[in-house]
Amino acid sequence: MASGPLGPPRAAIFGLSGPRLSEDERAFFRAADPLGFILFQRNCVDRQQVHDLIGALKDCVGRDDAPILIDQEGGRVQRLKPPVWRAAPAGARFAALAERHEDDAVEAAWLNARMLADELSTLGITVNCAPVLDIPSPGAHDVIGDRAYGATPERVALLGRAVSAGLLAGGVLPVIKHIPGHGRARVDSHAALPVVDADRATLERTDFAPFCALARMPWAMTAHIVYTALDPDRPATTSARVIADVVRGWIGFDGLLISDDLCMGALAGSVAERAEATLAAGVDAVLHCNGVLAEMEAVAAVSPALGPRALERLRHGETLRTAGLVPLQLQTAALRLESLLGRQVT
Image (cartoon, rainbow, N blue to C red; front, side, top):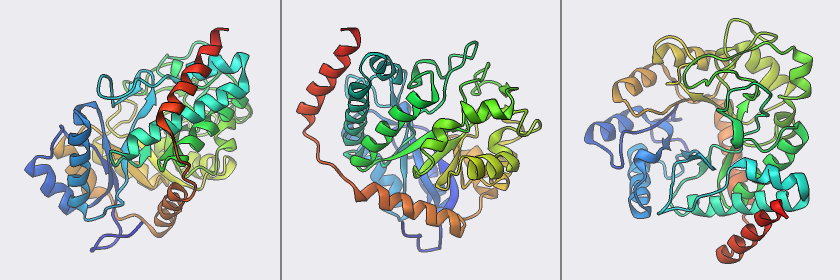
């Protein structure tokens, strides 16, 4: 990934308010030079509009390889929706198939992800915030729920790896999330701060395990969760102890680490304070999603340029994204996926 004319981009990824750039947004993005952008349903009307919007965003920062992100997991979390786009299955569909036919589930997860990559890359979207590697536990909030790929570390890792491989085969970077694990949260981190009291040995054996298995993936997203056994005072996103000792240390993830959305209710303080705390903890780039210009200006004011190590991680991801492309015959893939998913009830 090339730096812009003024050096490395800012360590922030921003959303925007609607399907077209306002003049104020255009001016701000030009001045701020964020690392990249994230799209939501409010930004996506039809294929041509999304393609044009992405072109305009890249023009703002003067980098054709600026990452364009989206949450297109399938199921209830997909920003590109019917009738314009395909309704992709949720992770639970593949988990259910794996209960009866594990090899078929792996193939189906890969095929679905490869189809997602095709749908995204044709628009210019290069990063998909998937797969979810969280393992729901009994009594947890259903914010993860059917987004999960199973109930065991082994199953989640197996299907998560297939999803990641399918996305990469289509030229889209996967983002493993929510590191080091969101499955025990008893409240939704969009609204409040979850506190997990499990001991470290239990976390290492279960929640952390899928992330260890996929630690060589290019991008990851943090969890806004307090783990009392790791750092009782700060959520993982703003905890230098969790980032260094667990994410980079025990798990061994050395790719580009981004925060979950700074706008979520789990974090305290102003958006600027949240951004400062996140970056100080060792996260490579902050994610701000709601498209509110005044908030983005505040985040930009405290976000420095990407550091040398983060740039190396970014470039490594780009190398992976373009290295192992696998051609897709879309109609054949769709029929095969339909056939495989039908087997979960046979």
